[in-house]
Image (cartoon, rainbow, N blue to C red; front, side, top):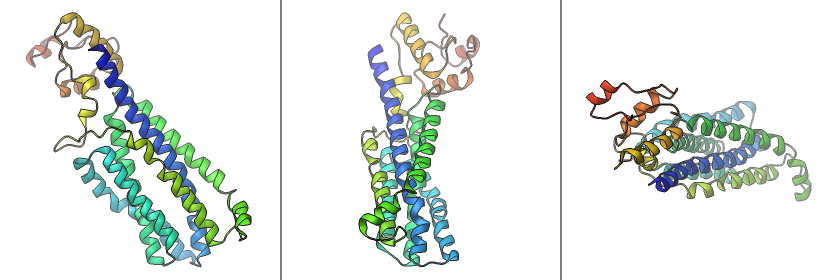
Length: 286
């Protein structure tokens, strides 16, 4: 039982870490792509007004993608939704490489923004599903820090690539072909972020809700057959939930009670009110 519990805890953390890695890789690739978009629009001969409209296409796509992202979160697994969003983003990058028309480029930019918000919303939900209350702030912090660092590095490095690539291709650094090669390279790097996602477990989202409790069910939904074994495992789970020092109900077979306990006793409260537990049908470990 103890080994199984430890295995589930590690699996849930692994899902979150896989997304964090994928998010960092995708942020770097899309950072390179985004860096050169406005340069490409200028090379294609668009004026300031149209460049501004094309730049706003990313935000427009994000707004349009908000509702579909919410609906997908209620119906699909996190992995499927992230892959679907990444596919939409990839289609936008490919369209930018192929077309010169303003309307098609605006649609392509919107697709990038649309897919991006689907990926980020489902990715954040995945981290929440895959972590306990004690692990969650750390994993979210790591995801944000890695993505921000990756975007910074992408912008820093990308600026130095156009000149040598232009020399290699026999074209000016600001030529549309050179810029599209760099945008495509960034897109390929971002596309490679699908590899970690393929190893994320495909846990179903509960019907009528937004969370996927099955992803972490093995770490919180346990029925104990003995008082001593229950106390030992509860201490393990208390550590995972950040509840050190608490005397918790002996059985936490109800996931809602487990969540309530984590939210209300995360600061190491010395005990749970025994009378309240008796009224709810649970007992307090001595």
